[in-house]
Structures are given as C-alpha cells and as structure tokens.
Amino acid sequence: MTVIDLGERSHDTEPDPPPPPPPVGRQLRAALVALLTLLALGAAAPAPARAVRIPVPATSQPGSLVAAGLLILVGERVAGPDGPPQLIAVDVTDGRTRWRLPLPDAAPVSVLERLGDDVVVTVESDEGPTTLLIDPTAGRVRWRRAGTATPTGDGGLLLSAAGPEAVHGVDPGSGAVRWSVASGADTVQYRYDARTVDAFVLVAVTGRIQVYDASTGERRAAFTIPPPRPGGYESTQVVGDLLLVVGEPDRVAAYGLDDGALRWEAPLDPTAPITNDCGDAICLGQPSRARVIDPATGRVRWTADGWAPLTLVGDRLLAGGPEGARQQYALLDPATGRVLAELGRWQPVGELRGKRLLVTRLLPRNRQLLAELELATGEVRVRHVLPGWSGSCDYADRVLHCLTEGGQIRAWRLPG
Image 1 (cartoon, rainbow, N blue to C red):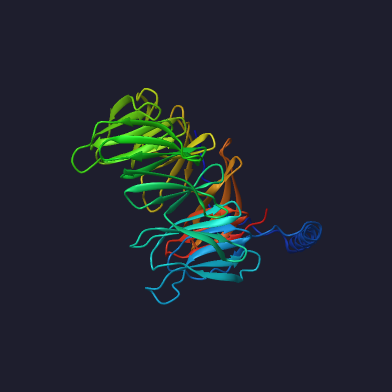
Image 2: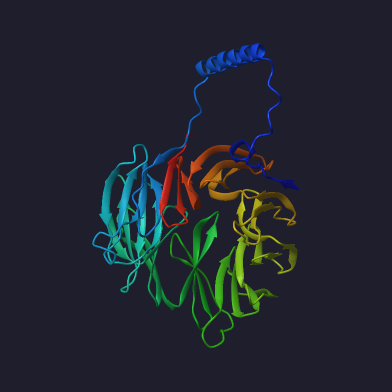
C-alpha cells in the first residue's frame, strides 16, 4: 500500500538549524558564486507559469461551468433578494463580464450543463421547471420549454415534465419535440452508459415498469414488480442492467431491465440505504464501511471497513474515510477492495485528466496546494499554491472553478 503525504516542509515548517558559518572570506566567495549562478539560471530559463486568478462577481446562488472561453455563473439577484437569478458570463482571459441574462422566476437552478457548444439551464418554480438553451457567446436564449433537462449520450436532450411524469425527446437546435412518452408514472430513472444517458425507466406506484430508449423514445421493455407498501417504494435506482428497488427499509431487490425477472435480494443497512455504481459492481455503502456485491448474483465480493466507495476514477475506486476536520480519501482496487494508496490530507477535485486526478491540500494561512495525482503510481506532483480554501471544484478548458466554504465562487486560469 502506498501512503501519499508530501508534507508541507517546503512551505510552512521551520527549516533545520543552519550549520556554523564559514570564515568571512569563504562565505563572501560562496555568496558571489551563488549569486552568479542564480543570475545565469534566471537568464537561461523562464519563470514557471503560475495560476492566474479570475475576478468573479459575488453570487447569491452558486453554480458555474466553462463554455466558449467563458465562465458561466449563476447568481446575483436582479431585483433584490426575492428577484429572479441571472446568468453571468465572465471572460476567462481578462475577467471581464461579457453579458448578463435574467432567468425566469425567483427559484433555484437545478440544471446547468454544456450541450455541444451551448448551455442548457433548468429553473425550478411553483408552476414547474422551465428549461432554456442559451448561446454562450452572445448570451442569447435560443429556445425555452417546460420540463427538466437531461442531456443524452448522442447529443440529444430529454425534458421530463412534472407528474404524472411525461418525457419528451427534444431537438437541441430548435427545441422542437421529436417524440413524447406519457404513462402516469411517478418517477423517472435514467440509465447511464459511460456517464451518458442511453435509457430511461418509468416507475409507477402500482409496480408497473417501462424501459425506453433515450434517443428514439421506443419502448424496450415493460413489466410489473411486486407493488410497494402503502406510501410507495423507499427508493428505486437504475444501475447497469438492473433496477434496484428498496421496498422495505432493510432489503434491496434487483430486477432485470430486459425482462423484469427478480435477479436477487440482499439485506440493506437501514441506517444508510445508499446504493451506487462501482464500475462492474454495486456498492452498498455507509459512512465508514462498504459492501460491494456482484450485480449478476447479489453475492458479496468484498467488504471494507474504514473506507466507503464514492466513485470509479479511471481503473481505481475512490473511497472516503470517516469525516473529521477534513475527510480523508483513498484509492482502492475495485476487484478486491485492497487499499492501493491513501491520499492522506489530499482531497480530489475537478475531473479526471487522462490518467491523472486533480487534488488539493489545505495549507496554513488560508491557502491550498493544487496538484496532480498519477493514478497508476500514486505519485503526486504539486502544480500551484492558491490563496484561500475551496471545497468542491470543477476543471474544464484549463479553468479551475471552486465553491468556497462561504458559498462563493473562486476561479483560476491554469497553464497548459
């Protein structure tokens, strides 16, 4: 097992006591040699590129993404605290605000994603969700429709309306509805293939299940599972080719999406009914323990005490430990649960960059280190020291944008 902890000696700890000084003459000659060497090195090599802070307006409803060389922010009420939010486009090269676009209703934004060269936004309200497609270069609304947006893997777009649930396939260019599915279902679940949606599942309280192709709207399967207790199912979730159903607080049942057959049942800790996808397995997790099961049989592959799997990163399983002042993280072998590397105080941020993961580490005096973690070797390469401490971050198009603990957005342009 690799333990990664670079320490902060070069930044914040006191150096070892210096050796006794040499005689004055030798000390002066050494200083001159060192000075000449530094001058020569400075002339021969350019200074290393540094992260450049991007001025970002304060926002009252944090949310951000990068598109078309702009940092798109959600926030800043136009007409006071009860007025509608707006989108703010900040140029990542100079920090200037290029445009502002008021959004409808004084309600939160539930979706903010890129869709090709455009940006899709869903705003919630008492009347139901509204989705807008926006040209980020001009801040112009191309079209708007009722419903919550879900991009699909082929560049298309799904809009789900408020219940009884209906799903529409929409042409992203024009907003025209290509097809519609209305079934009286109570929830919509989406199946992800390589992190994109390729199917959706309508779940009714009667136990009626229907599976549809996300690109064409064609029905792939329809079946019925045992109806839930009064009040509905505890939860449902699509993982791979299975529909996981928690009908009672302490059991999860897995049904095949192709035929509705019961594949297996397994006990579930009622204090932490969490299910998530772990690559080719299913994780039933809780804060400090994980149970990883085979999706085909429901049998336990392995358990891990002290680490709860969070997500698959490359060919490693990112796991979190018990939360303290700062949560600890580790990389596990997805097949066995063996700890491959403990990240210590390094925390993952942003997205996977090839086979490297961006990580940060808190430093004294309200600063943080930004580094890249090599997944294959566990090696950490420090890239920048950034002022301030930020929590969740995203990285796109060489822009790192983070949500601070105070609820504001900070952003930096990083060298390539």
